[in-house]
Length: 141
Image (cartoon, rainbow, N blue to C red; front, side, top):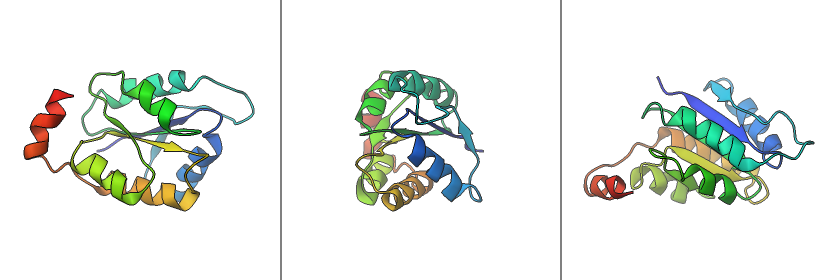
């Protein structure tokens, strides 16, 4: 069974909570923090925490939320076995899974509307890696 890990910094906290609430009947999330939007935290701490969990099993998926999605993505992509994609549309989300076998989606709470984020997450979870010619490219990462 896929494990869905989710984490955010203070800027992404509210969107993270909305994501969990929206999908609570469909998916079970393991929330790795932060626990509020009032106390400023360092996004790399939460990205690293989530990456350690996701990298343990190839079926695991992670969702990281910060202000832009960029900081979390940069921190996450430092880890072996992690391919984090900043997603802002259904199309780029689908391609991140089909062609790049991304295992973490990063979202920018200040740049992505809630409903777009929900559509991206649903697409990310449901889309499978295409393999084929993309497999050798992903191995090179």
